[in-house]
Image (cartoon, rainbow, N blue to C red; front, side, top):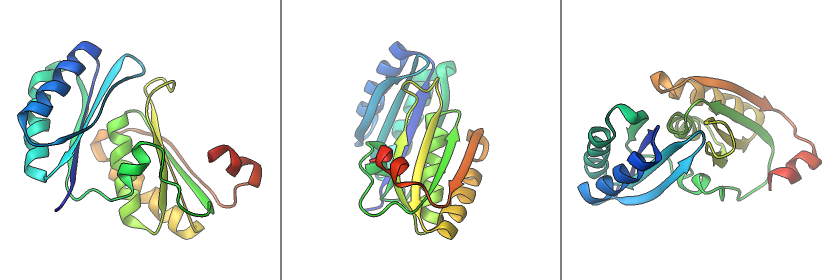
Length: 182
C-alpha cells in the first residue's frame, strides 16, 4: 500500500484540536500527531492511502479556514520520514551531517521527504517548533556527496511552502558533537 502523509499547521490551539478531530473523522487515516507547537500553533499529521489523506486534509483546511498557516498532502512519502518525526531515525554511523531549517513544520516535512528521496541519506530527526519559535529543522547523515545532494533537493522540495531559513552540510562532525546528537 502506498503511504501518504498530510499535514496542517494552524495558528490556533483550540481550532487545531477541533481540526484534528474532524480530520480523523473525515476519512480512514491514522492520526500520527496532533499537538501544540510554538509559537501558539497546532500541528496535525495524518497518514494513510492518498485518497483518504487528501479527503482528511481538505476537511482540515475547510475547518481551519484562515487559521491554517501551512498544509500539504504528500503521496508516496519516504519511509524514513515516519521514524524521523519521533526522533528515532538513527540506525547507523553518523558521517557528514546535513541540516535544513524552515519557518514552518509542514515545510520541514516536505524538505525531509525530498532530501530522503534524492540521495542515499538517513533522516535522523525532524524537530518541530517546540522551543524553536515556530521554526523546524531536519537532520540527516550519509557520505558528503549524498548529504550535499539531499540538502539541495530538500531546499528545492519546500517550494512555495517555505521559506527555508538556513541549510548547512557539516562534512566531518567531531566525535563530541556527534555524541550530542544521539
